Structures are given as C-alpha cells and as structure tokens.
Length: 430
Image 1: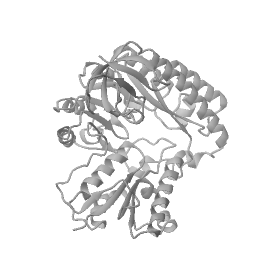
Image 2: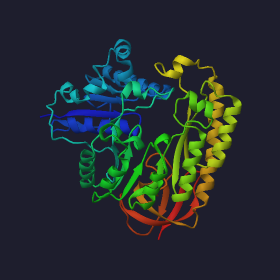
Image 3: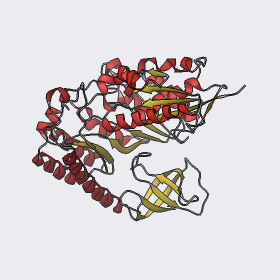
Image 4: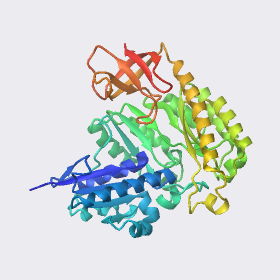
C-alpha cells in the first residue's frame, strides 16, 4: 500500500510546537510518511501563528506558497492554529484554495480530515532534537494585557493536572529527553485554577524526580507572580537551571499601567534584587515592546537607561503591533510611525548586543557544563552546545573543541576560551 506523504509546517512559539507534536502523534500510522519536502507531499499541514503582524504575515505567506503547489500536483492543504482561530471566516473567503481550515478546538479531528483512523494510544511525536523537549503545563491566560490577543485566541488559563504532566515527562524521558523546557502563557500562575493556589513548586518537585531528566528550564514567568520564595526554591534545586524567561514589556509606570500589566517598575527592580541575593549566577531572558502608542521619546530613553543598568543576559525586542480586539486597539490610535518604531527597535538591539557581549566576556577562563546539541554546519566535526545560560534555538551557542568523541545529548565540561561574536563562545572540553 502506498503511503500518504505528509509535510507538517509548525510556525510560531514552542507552545504551538507542542500542539503540532500532538497532531503528529495523532496521524502517525503505517499509512503515513512524514516528509520535509512540500513539493513531494500529498498533504501539507500548516499550524499557524496569529499573534502579531509579523507572525500573521509569515503564516499567510506560508499558506500561499503551499496552495501555489496545488497547481502542479493534486495535493491537499490543511491549515490550523492561532491564525485560523482569529480569522477563520476571512481566510475561507480570501484563500478558498485551502481544503480545510481547522480551529483550535477541533484539532483532534485532523486525522479524520486526512482519512486516518484515530488511535487513542498515540502520543506526541517529538520534533526537537531527541535530547530535549517542551512540556506545556497550561493553556490560555487570565491576564488582559492591553496589547495582547492571546486571551481572545486561547481563552482563559487552564492548567494540566500534575499527575498528567509527570506521566508526560516520564514518557519524554523514556524517549531520551534530558532537558525539559517548561512552557505556558503564564508559568508562575500554574495550578491556581484547579488547585486554588499556585502549584508550580509542587509540580517542579515531582518533575525533578523523573529519572533521566537532567535539566529543567523555565519559560514565561509573569512578573506579578514571581516572588522571593521562587528564588529560594530555585537556589535549592538540583535540576532547575539558573535561567528564566520573564518578559517585562516596559519599565515606565504609566505605560505599564496602560498596558494593564499588573505591576510597576519597582516590582521588576525587586525581582532583580532577589535574583542577586539568592541566585546571582542566574541568566535572565526578557523582552520589551517599543513604540507603544503612549510611549514618548523620554519614556523610551528612560527604558534604555533601565536596561543598561539591569543587564539582562538576553533580550527580545518587539515593535508594537496594533491588534484588533485588544484594549489598546480600542483605546488608542497606532500613532507612532513605523520608521520611528524601527529606530527605537535598533537602539535597544544595539544596547543589548553590547550587554550580552560584555556578559559573555566574563566567562572566558571559566568552566561550564555544556549539553551537546549537534555539530557545526561549517565544520561538521565541531560539536556545538549550550550551557545553562542559553535556551535552545534562541540564545547563544558554544563551539566545543575536543579530541574525544561526543554525541548529541552528552553533558560535558567545557572551559571557555574566547567569545566568537557578541552572542556565541568557543571553548575546549576539559
């Protein structure tokens, strides 16, 4: 029997990737062959992102590219994900060449749409390198940040029970996963909806017991729910890495208030003080938005000054995207010109490049445990990896000079020799 060739394209964040992996698990049968090649595929399945303008544009372009291939061969194009959840009717009207638009609540019906019998025992198919995986601990968000469309797309915060997450972590560990990356819309709020109080610590205690898991990395901690106890907990943990992702979005109080973030600059400063007190070696990735409608030049310069002092290890920068259906869209006009947003964006990027470079220089001569992720494309025998300070596929990497054979997933000790550029480093195995 000829197998059906399916090309699956996942766009957007790691949380979306987890959804894609469940979809892959649902259609993994003897009838299906996964292929990275869209042209030779019988079915192209796209899991879209619809968060901000840039993500929507990427999703639309990917869909249009897929449907253009239908002119050359008889293939199906199926589209799901956040973009579909937001704009299903418009998409059906504007891109009728797509065979099926499937919203989030009906993703479990994708196998049937492909003519595949659903098998309840099917589990996630991991699409990351085999030694690491994402664990999505909750869905949706209870915050009403003025610029954010996520609550409209994904709904209210809904936590997965601890026992289910532990079982999933055991399954991942059995597949060879060593690094567990915890993701959600609001990680520090975990459990409040089903247990009546935040239960992140209890979840992490149980995940630490999973045999085979060596590193646990935390993404998307929301500042309002990060407290002193969190840093005490991480300090005493054996597996939780001294790394957090914690978007702050801005530093000026009146903008934070208008953004409906629920905290002010003082709280961010307090968090940084707790970090220095309990885990001074902790790496923090944050993010900010430039060009918010009420941001003046003075506000922007004050934020630059704050970032210069805070010295985050890594920083994502976004230009404000005027998203329909959000409070900011209803309240404000998108009055800051695109050219000005880009100027501010570039200034923050330049500042952060210098900060990250300065941080990396401090590690020359020091030894770090490094997880091997693969081998350099340029020098195929040269291993590359990350220390606790870097998240996979986001932050800087370490090129590893070694005379010993190493394999993907190994954790080895590396002495840093030099900084390769502002973000990456070179070291030798010791």
